[in-house]
Image (cartoon, rainbow, N blue to C red; front, side):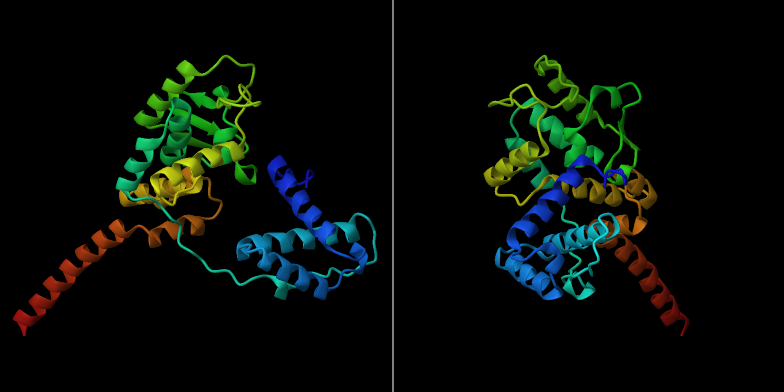
Length: 284
């Protein structure tokens, strides 16, 4: 995985999944069969893991056996079969309505938290991109942020709106002095003054979600930005670049939830159709 330049977070997650499997399995790994994998999937389902998470486990185990065969030279057959993958639904990206965004930010306390979540809402940053943000990638004069080595190892440029600039500036004025390169720091506990972790940011989001009773996550703010841009008639390719999607098909999913744009297009087209119908009726 390091040869493939996978991120440290991806490597950590893969190793954790393999660890869970190896601890659970009651035979040597070279004796695992496709039935063992099926029983392990049953175990994951009993623990109420989502189909997407189960498929992630299955794919990790398959890669693990590829490694044992190709790198370690074990004469084994990969026990993971295509039929082990769970059937996946394709849920639409979830976003917040304008009034929900307003209600959410009403309860957000502190300059740090507001700045972190505004970067997600206005710039479309992922939670790990916010956690890894450093001063060197921010150009205030050009109002840009360089997302260095984002998901999939891709770099991209995002732009800062006025409210992002204001919230980020407010936080930097009160940010404690620290030798840490990363901008956002923990404010309490043993980690005080150290960079806040991805999980730390997610916990803050969960706290505000409980307080507002709004079903929201960090990724929902990113989805909200994409939907708002689409409703404001931003070009699909522009949104793709800002979000860092490799495939425009990923971005096109927002077209299915952008009800405002669909609504406008529908009524505009219907006006043309009704006029044509009326003209045909008069001509007849």
